[in-house]
Image (tube, rainbow, N blue to C red; front, side, top):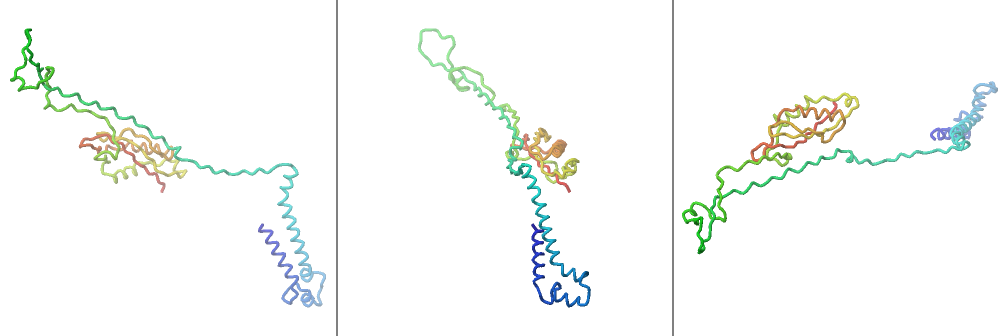
Length: 277
């Protein structure tokens, strides 16, 4: 299209020059006759100036015809051969990335805690006195015995209520936001970042491909501070995911989280950043 516009402008300019009969027009016949008076008119500059417009028109017409043939030739061939031009349309499809995220693992509910059995209180059976003719084999309880124990429908020995109740061991893993004292890496968050920066090794494949991102790793800080149950929560690529899990498994013991002053298991999610510098 730009080529056609250029040719049209050139043609209009040439026509304007031929129509200009003033002395400033180098193609004016009067000027050429005066300049070339007494000289040869059969060849040289005089012929070039005289034939300039005609040759320019021939060149423009030839160029337009050549361009038209070159543009229309494929369509003419396609029409003669009966082939139809098939235009492929690109269809934009919205992809929901949430469908590719790793499904959250449903944790089993904690086992029900059975209530402790009721404390047995020492008591003696109290029998209501009735006047009967039969001989009573066991004499009723006297008032002095009731002063040292309790009256009941049965006689039983009591338990020592001063003894401490039996401890109930619960193996429960708490969420990070639910504990009173959160677990902590030795030295705090700054020491944790230094540990990751020193021990993380960028995989060669991801380095060559320029892959970066943040990998989320989930693990459990046990009662003694050891790291267990390390799993991938959300990843970026195979190499970065494996490296993040590997580094988390090599972490030293943490300070465990606490509930009521006692160490408990706490679930922790750690983001590991991979940045190419």
